[in-house]
Length: 334
Ligand SMILES: C[S@@+](CC[C@H](N)C(=O)[O-])C[C@H]1O[C@@H](n2cnc3c(N)ncnc32)[C@H](O)[C@@H]1O
Ligand code: SF4
Image (cartoon, rainbow, N blue to C red; front, side):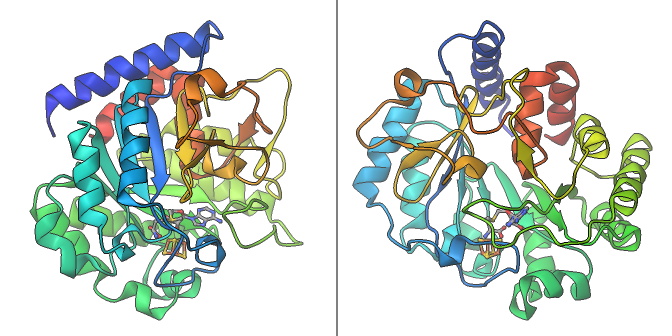
């Protein structure tokens, strides 16, 4: 990975952090963009495939990327839905490249074979792996497991970094052990995140029965494995935050003593080009269309929640709340 790009991100993040610290103007350094809501599978916990399938034109995407660049964003994550379903996906990557962004993507890898020789501009890959074949298929359907391991191997062989995200629907230590052994063997990292509930981009509400003791046991086990050097990308602070979470039936809440880094340091842009502080806040507040409006001057810094255990959002938030340990962890991952 180019040191220059990392230095650029570090500098933009530093400015976001200062602005967050002094309660200054929003200054996101990173943006996640759902290029499509469409998907080729229907995972049990995800609502993207049920959302509006309308997509932005390349011209509109260019408008948004130009705006992001002017706002000081240095890192763009292309996600969905399934981004590789867009026939013009490579042109979207080219538009991101034109603005010199550090480009990452989230993909289920089902269409990887078709694209494998054309993804050179992707700096970092995220995919989804929920455990062994049985547990993965239970969450994501049979088709989702076919060829995923060969696609992962091919990405690693091309000297690209890859993190596989495991959505923890069942806190089963044997499944985590399986994934960590696999990660060691395949030279990838695993990010564990709790299934989150009750927002527009997810499917399900919390189950009636929550086994808090079992959940805490699972995350304590991950903390110990992380301390002993297991290939876990998730930071120790993130894991500790989850262990200390009081009620696992809720993914986020508003605490007026706290402020969140979402919207100030990073943003989410939906498939219509409307920006929100993070994906979890879509549907809980009014967004700002980046086709016509500027985020840094228009966002009022108010978020519907200030504490959460939502997927990668918590990791981003900790970059602002626990910057030193979070930066050390991020550096270890690259
Ligand atoms: C929305 S997907 C988009 C990228 C791609 N289609 C994929 O599945 O990797 C991004 C990540 O969110 C995760 N995800 C989806 N629904 C979730 C939920 N309810 N709670 C936590 N993570 C979730 C997915 O497993 C995936 O790793
Ligand atoms: S998690 Fe990814 S692969 Fe699964 S339905 Fe959602 S967008 Fe599609």
